[in-house]
Length: 124
Image (cartoon, rainbow, N blue to C red; front, side):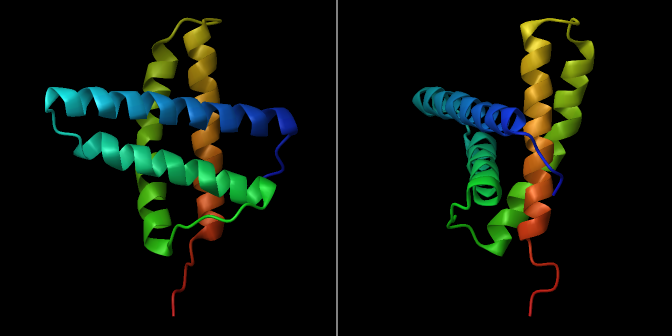
């Protein structure tokens, strides 16, 4: 995994925590409305795993996730990047939204990279 500065680490943690909070609020709202929550539930779990993996790499915190959960989260987070990058490309230069999206993209890329280091490529 690439060498990451402390400010980028802090921004990545903050970005993941913000995304998790927004996803929890969306899940709560959707549940109240009786909407299908499968996708938001899967994304929320992937965001939590992404944060846990970054904390594992940078702060030596253990996490409870197995290889299958890591692999699923990695695929989901990596799959979100193109749509977020598309929104980023359309956002106005210098806008708060563009900054937020820039940080979100970086944090997702770092989490995917960290997961690559956690996932056992040759399970026995």
